[in-house]
Length: 137
Image (cartoon, rainbow, N blue to C red; front, side, top):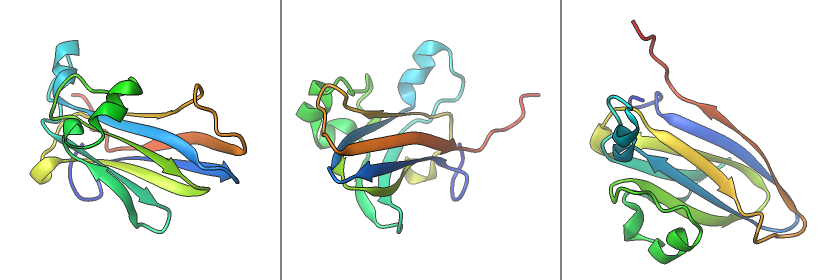
């Protein structure tokens, strides 16, 4: 992952009349524990509406929503990693992962909805992802 337009983006759609709880996390430093070379040192995640306005953002997951993130099983293992939980109404959304202060490296982004906390009347359509990929030579 790089900077500017070459960041990791996941898009998803919430449909229906009822709000939907979603969680997104961005891992970086902990990926080294799994043999990933050059992980993103300090990921930031930003959740945007389809019009580009920001719903919320997170840098270090323990700074906001710590109890809720832990209770949902979404807590990253490294304090520098990012996570957030939001309740969204119908619409298009993007979750953008970038590096703090323009940092680059390999991120991993996870999007989830809560089946155990159903919200009748809403659906989340499958997320689509885009990120820069460099050839391995």
